[in-house]
Image 1 (cartoon, helix red, strand yellow):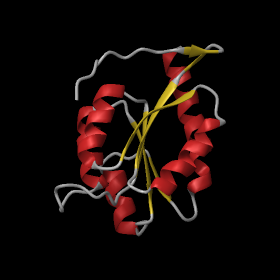
Image 2: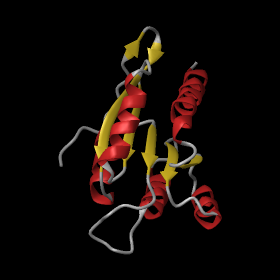
Image 3: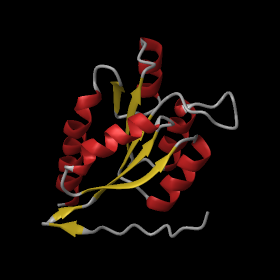
Image 4: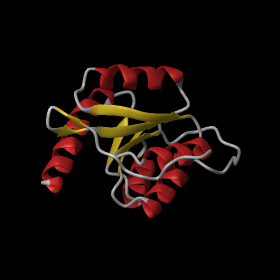
Length: 147
């Protein structure tokens, strides 16, 4: 996949456009996130990926501000997971805000994700509605650091 690695910022009503990539293999979850984000100003869904290899390409091409990432992803490598991708993304993109959104919300997963650099860890069954709130929080922090 060829892409430009340049980072451009579009302005909507004096707010920088925040780019979000969704990485989840469930069409239902992706649809719910898209629906939540559609009503939020100055947020662009920069890409959607269903596995690790496509997620790496989408992130590299779109240079997002935020990745919403599931732990369980079907991929070519059976031992890989969203946790593997989290570690890779954190190593390559220090500025990236990563929101883990998963059904695997047991404490060992939670601790491992935070240890590897996830900014937030959400349980799909109980925390899903927090996504817009967290994105607004991230958007605010991006605006204050850019000023």
